[in-house]
Length: 146
Ligand code: V0V
Ligand code: CO
Image (cartoon, rainbow, N blue to C red; front, side, top):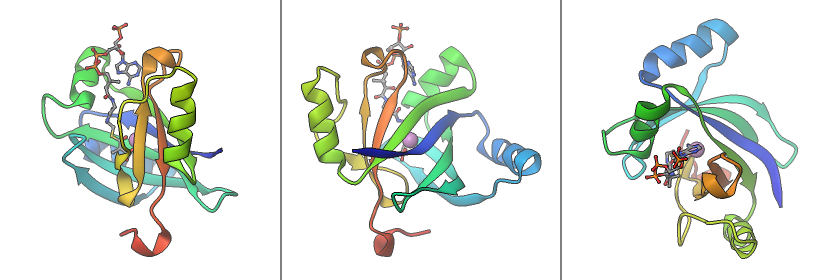
């Protein structure tokens, strides 16, 4: 079961300036930030609200760390904006297997490491009416580093 919007991923050219926009305009603070070398992003998670499944919903601001990353490629084509949405689930393996059976391309054979120690996979945007869709299982609370 998919039980929350885990995050909305927003691609930007300058993470620090974009973080400052969200702070100054809305009062959202950075909850967590990290570099994910595998994904080629520097990211900031801004927590918006807790959710009834024990998780939370975030904005995920993403700046590319290298020219050949998926986000750099997307920014060059589209400019800044909403890059993906992510649904939260207790079991990303089962969810992605079930969705794959429905004929939607799941991009990873096995879930990979996402923000705050989560396990993530992606669904191809061309199979999802133009929306790059991510599935997320958060790390257990005791092992996530904030
Ligand atoms: C590409 N397309 C998109 C899109 N990216 N459509 C909607 N939203 C996006 N974000 C469209 C694009 O316009 C093309 O359509 C078509 O898909 C093929 O795109 P492409 O530019 O040729 O790029 P590809 O095929 O090399 O790569 C596209 C995919 C790639 C989706 C396969 O971006 C990918 O593997 N994404 C998953 C990983 C990722 O995005 N990581 C960054 C976030 P036309 O022009 O042919 O019609 S990392 C993250 O979220 C983390 C760490 C986390 O949450 O914890
Ligand atoms: Co994401």
